[in-house]
Length: 342
Image (cartoon, rainbow, N blue to C red; front, side, top):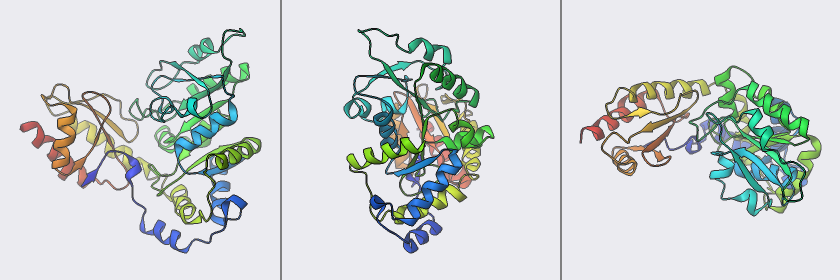
């Protein structure tokens, strides 16, 4: 079975499994796990931040940012199709007690002038604007890269209004590789940033949240409050360190494979690709194929390919380190062709 539902399905490499087996461990709640400590230091340096914290998931990292930066009753600004808004169970409202205010972006990028206009004026009737969320790459926009220039423009508006910016950078390494810059080039226009180690980088579990020393100190306490304090976490931090050191440059392989898949899909009558493929996500439009997207998901599964829906008539394919060019050429494309011919 070839699994293209997400890059979260990657399996740890042999080197990661060995690192987990051999990991020296300690109690992370006491700050005594050497691999966790090393991972946090290494991640902070890569992201250009003072400190970092190893957390269980990207969602947990994003929620910690809301809990630290904002107060209950405040409003947070974010793009209308942001992962935090659509796919995190309403957690920013349920946990941090904040109200989302959405802005329509262009390929996931909010215009700085729209953000500026959305910031609340001082008025007894209004909630204060407490935080601005940015997502990069933007999942719902098909892995679109929000440029460094766009990041800076929004950050400048936030700075002028005294409002913090948090970056949901679940696939920020994909953005950096695609744009030919470093993750720190993006992260410097934020007050805090979350990056997933368990997506394209292939670690078995975990994300990093980074920011100032003061921010991370508060985030660590909130992580404990949420039950996220981990004990001998070196067994997952050790493979995550390998992911961070060795699996960044290879993301271009995933991007190239996604572009090849998109080009091939475009040659089938009745199918089209909705997104400009910059990273590892391909959004296939099946609305003119004569089959529903449920038919496609079921039919592809019967032919050994797993994919997922992104709304009526839209399928998402995500390339990752467990998918090869041969998988695409000899299995995925023949499965699509066979299903179309039925």
